[in-house]
Image 1: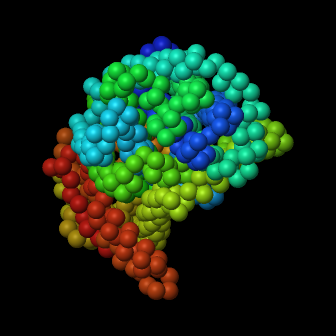
Image 2: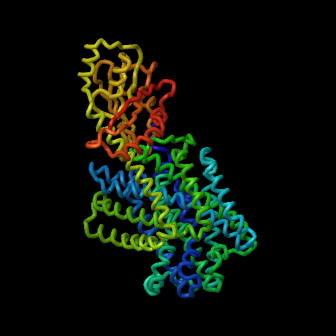
Image 3: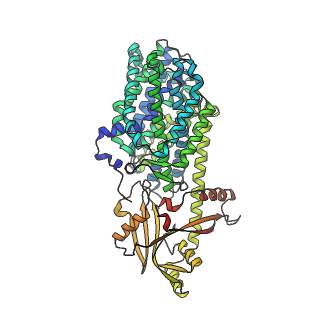
Length: 627
């Protein structure tokens, strides 16, 4: 494969204008569509009939949440901690975990944060599409019975088109979202013109009064206020696509002003006496524009959902290569866009969960109760990892690092606590989903580690293995054999097993061990480390980043160019296919873990597919491993 970094990674030298346009379509879909349901949810949590003073306080809370969480925490600080240009909690975990060999707490925090994102990914499409279509109810209640069925149809179509890739559709994501932000900003400005007095909410005193001057009600509404920043984590997770500078330009140049204006416009028409029982977002538009706005809103929510789904695919690939997820078939849907991938298992599971949530909760109001707790917990974990980054990467003194992290942490904890109050109303859903994902990742990692431990127990030194071949007069046949191995020392176990069963071995041999580094991309010059163990016997240790696709045939060509002279015109690839059983009750893994890991191992993708091996030249060797 071409080991160079994808074009999208070269954002430092790209044109910021086009990249900022791309960011509008890729990064800001989630946070950009939050005005559809946030103010409506906040009003309902506040009792449904807020006074003008309370409306101003709620608006101030929304504005300052956007500023403090998204602009200050993420755009200013978190996005400065990049792993070779890539962001996201898994990339951050890998960056910090690489600095010491044993950091189980960092790994646990990072993995659970990633698992929580899957829970958010299942809810976002459901609540977004439902909110958009519910705008039809303002035009006429005759549409009400059809909103949920239409939502299900749109979600089905959204997931059904994923196998075809989004390269073509992706070209219009940026322009459509640009139109979306311009329209909602203009609508908000129209509302502000009706009642410009709402701009006093820019004063944070109003936010403090709404939060602390209204008793328990102020804390309750904080869970709804959090909905305005649920997409903030995407700024960090998706910055590898376009780069931090372009993301910041799009955020400050269009997204933040449009969001502030729209929320202010919604507050203005509420202060002017608009019915708080309706979806206040659509009240900003005249009735003649309702149908076009529902159509644009639906398109915007589809784009937001697409970004979430694509993000889940990308995070799954990272988890696979980092050894925390079973091998799944990853299909590249574009020859030029590295991020254009499709993971069928993730797609269909997300579809089932998302449609189940839409049918189970029925309305966006109900789904809002389940939304938020997963993202708020992820943000809290990002803050914890940011503190470590401040100390170890930026070399900040303890006091300023602790002070800033404490400020962010207090905000995060407040949001987590407020969302925790919705636990029994649906907040448990993303937590259960995250717990399942985290548990599966832990089982897979422990199972692979147990296999490696058992294989290392039976390693045979290369010299002893070759001497045994000669002593037993093992036949050497023409051709080149490539043995994929999990071990870096001794003779590959799959090679030993092959000789034991077939009593023959090829004349020319490769032992290849693929290592995934804790950085997204590895310098091509550092890819291959090879050594000759004996005449006609070479060991290759190939290092890939967690954003790269291992390609063994291409790797052999690189090794040949680097001085390995073994012939490549007649190559057979040998891979091991393990079946795990429990070692014993005393020193083996728990029975439930062995059963679960064994199921995952049986249903994972083949190594041939993961490493791009030609199917007609692969020999799988089955073996039983006790763990």
